[in-house]
Amino acid sequence: MKDSERPLILISNDDGIEAAGILSLASALDAVAEVIIVAPLHEMSAVGHAITMRDPVRARPWPFRGPSGQLTAFAVSGTPADCVKLALDKLVPRKPDLVVSGINHGPNTAVNVIYSGTVSAATEASILGIPAVAFSHCRWGGGDFEASGRVARQIVENVLKQAPPPGILLNVNIPDLPIEKIKGCLITRQAQARWEEQFAERLDPFDKPYYWLSGTFVNMDKGENTDLWAVENGWVSITPILHDLTAYRVMDELSLRDWNIDSIN
Ligand code: MN
Image (tube, rainbow, N blue to C red; front, side, top):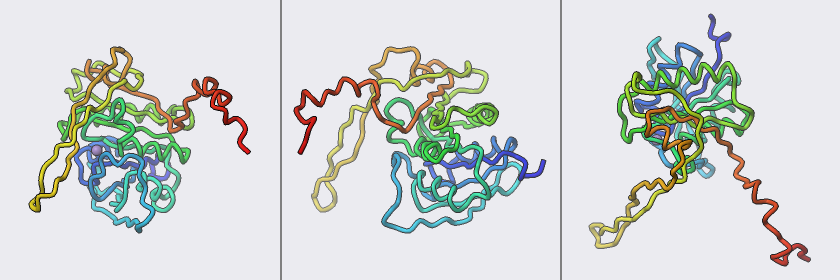
């Protein structure tokens, strides 16, 4: 099949173009589609949906070797959301069939979805009307991406056949297990969990204090249909998410009449 007849997949991440996770993702998807990689030059984890507005953004062609040889790739001086915006406007040869982000080095479950650059790259694609999937490998700092690459390929093959509804992206978290230990996939919701954070306070060489964010992740959720429960119990978690943050179920409860500001003159 010629490249122009194969589906086109745009790949990005937040760990940077040299990360092991994006290499395993590109390698796994190279067999099912034409892939183009547009990823940050440097690690951009936890930048959320930040975009660059006060500086120029540069894209440099990057020597990226997949199993079949050289892949088209660009390293970008911006954030994950910048990468997807710039790629779709200027760098891709045609509209991609799918945008895939990851494979992130660490989980993006529960509230971490908000902070995640990995998820934001996929979110940007869904805002721009392209189906998108974010993949995360549930081990901080790396691990063996063999299994997560294979899982990603299976999910992508299905999404190419049947995309989620417009505006919905899939946030996939893969447990850090060999492939034979992974039980399968579950559709999940974000767990109610958060960071209990503390800033460590230290002194710099000039005796001025500085602060460094650290903390522990606390799961308050007893549900067995959550992203955290799934990955802790050997399942691949697939959470459908959307960027519309409106709390629709509360709209009727918020009574402006009670606030006495229903008419402002
Ligand atoms: Mn990351």
